[in-house]
Amino acid sequence: MDSVYLQVAYFVAALLFIFGLKKMTHPRTAVKGNALSAIAMALALVIALVARDGYVFITVGLMVGAAIGVWLATTIKMTAMPQLVALFNGLGGAASILVAGAVLMLDPHQQAHELIATAATGVIGAVTFWGSLVAFGKLQELKAFKKPFHVPSQQMVNGLLAAFILAMCALFVVLNTGHGLVYVVIVLAASVLGVLLVNSIGGADMPVVIALLNSYSGLAAAATGFVINNVVLVVSGALVGASGLILTSLMCKAMNRSLTNVLFGVMGEGGEVADADEVYRNVRSTSADDVAMILDGAQRVVFVPGYGMAVAQAQHAVRNLAKVLEEHGAQIEYGIHPVAGRMPGHMNVLLAEADVPYEQLKEMDEINQTLDTVDVAFVIGANDVVNPVAQTDPNSVIAGMPIIEVGKARTVIVIKRSLSPGFAGIPNPLFAADNTLMLFGDAQKAVLEILNAVKENL
Amino acid sequence: MQRVLKWSCATAVLLAFTAAGLAWAEDGVKPAQPEPTTVKSLQKQLLEENAPAPPKTESVETASAATASATAEDIEAGGLSPSVIALLLFIFVLAIFIGFEIITKVPPTLHTPLMSGSNAISGITIVGALLVAGDGQGVSAFIGFLAVVLATINAVGGFLVTHRMLAMFQKR
Image: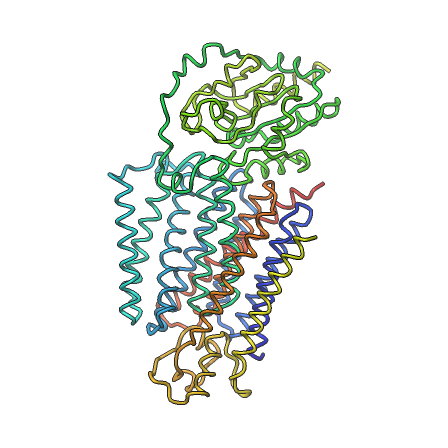
């Protein structure tokens, strides 16, 4: 095959990636879009294989990788999706480090721009890999990651580490002979930085981190593209980088926090935190039977899910309840906050798994406009994203964060295990509002109880 | 409609630049040469033809150059012209713009599949991994092998799991 055909074929692969992503803009075409991207990958793979002689090593590597990939992708539970995405992210970053390292071993006499690209790959790849591993550990709720380990004056340590990495990169480029040892030092230092950066981040900030690491994995691939001068790596890496950046900024906006604020773990300096006992004096709890009575004759019902729904795996129960209500003439919608859950779009995936039609999934801004005509709003395992303090108290830690204004509904039913605060650590006056009833218990069990009570009533 | 137009224009520009770059790089390739795989190796040959005595002799047995069982002259060739780097940077920036244009239109409902799908795309490093895996010996070959495995898990697993998710959205 002539070289120019190879280049054109790589180029076609890059174009297919673009078209594949383009089709991701609608649920109906998204499956095709993903398939298109997969075809593009297969094409790039075939080209890379054609360009060289067959090799046993490669075949074995491909087969082992594919087997593990298929196994992970087919056995994972939908609720474990955030962990899996984090893990895959990390593997991409690691592969980039290895490729750049291997190229360096094969040809230490690189030019300045290649050395810069190699150093960049090492830094971004290592931060991606270790950051993703820590994120995985946190999402999987492994014991070692339950509490972030304390680093004295972490911000300064991070700053010094970053400066050290930059200096090493400069040295790496200036030395001009592609020093393998310096590369290893860069990778190690960046690894520590990756661990430290994600270590202090948790809970509701997880969607931002996952999106950012997603972006990094793309940038690492693009940097590798500069190392081996390959168009398809550069283009697809850039696409992924852009995609991750957009998601990151969307997530930050949804929390009214800046990226630096999230990354450096500075929860806004909140004023005095209201006393929980004081706020919760008038909390009224209810029972499944009472909820069923309230639901009798409800015209519009909205479900607002949060991470608690994912933990309790309550999405199927919720869907079944919604189905029964629908059969009796109620209009069902789901109000979804952008940062509900542990990654962008987390709630949507869970509800889609439970067969909820995507037309019923409403974005925050859309659902907020009509919430005052809603009869019953269910809050299932959500807390901070429905906390009215964000709008009423300018001194609160979550001041200015857009929320789903469920308080406007005629009746609000909050299903929650206890009155414990959410990630922001502040009490939620919604729970004590006049039109709010608390139903304490595990989300799945509680919803099933309501479902049975509703069925008996009808 | 306007969006489609804008988007197509951006793609066309990207296409044009890449094609121009390819044609330009191809200019210097001897017809009888065995196939080199990258712009870099093409460029090396170009320089070699036009300037038979490159100022410095570098061992350029990189993964990319060596891939195509490069000739001895190839290995004697000079460096990569700055304009190729500029071209790659150009493509990089344009691709980011296209990415921004497209991704902003993805509805929040699809954000998780978007993330895992684009994540799978970043498994494209597999191309680089393939290029180095066979070239090296000993340690570098093993590193390449490891990179192939990791990138394949990333790509195959990523696309599959995205498909699983999207199929759920499409059921109705």
